[in-house]
Image (cartoon, rainbow, N blue to C red):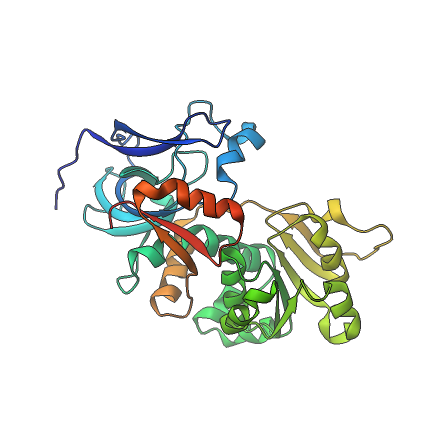
Length: 340
């Protein structure tokens, strides 16, 4: 199968990588620079909260010559691939493009072989666009850092029995990363999955599989734990918020537990006088691993995992999508259609 590839395309990019302003312009279609590169015609992308500020906040992580195109979550169709790639023109794929390279808010983008996975045939473009970054972050928090065993998701009963000895707590449980973390922890057989969220998301979090929900607008996490510490302290914390909320998380986690954050350094927010000795206290940045995304794709394709989509915008309405993202009120991912 071959595709006719135009010379130019529509691209949304930051006017300046140090400022959040966006502009729609015409740019050349990118070329494949390496034998493992894959050119994808983008169907949809999903922006990530705060991504327009990353280059300013973490300049050491971003090449100076990076074209500042947002949208690291990408789903689309392969139209060209390098000689070392196993993906072929016509394959429907999705991925999380590493933030050090241009994203998917353009009609064509380049992904690496190592980042890509085949999109499940049973999953639509919009749901697929809402999956990679959030699901990979939750997956790595639980199974690479948090101590749960992924084998339980694929029929390993011994792994499920070991997971059943652990309690898991997830903050921002009604958001995209937190929502996947709740679903994965429950599906993996954790003894208890506690979701922390606001009042308007309680029912949603329960529906995702949480066995208990703490509504932070009505009760502090510390007081909830103190009501029954023997049964409410947890073995694993997945923090998606950071900041002052970590005070309650230090109360909730057991001695010897794993405190995993995608938002802040747990030790930075350890309360004075808290002497708990943890097995792990880690902040991590998600890695774009196609092998893990392939495993996630299997679960999403089987409807064992449900991507959370808040809203969908047309390509020309990209600014409205980012404005809503900035309000931090979304219940899941905001998706921008590019060529759906």
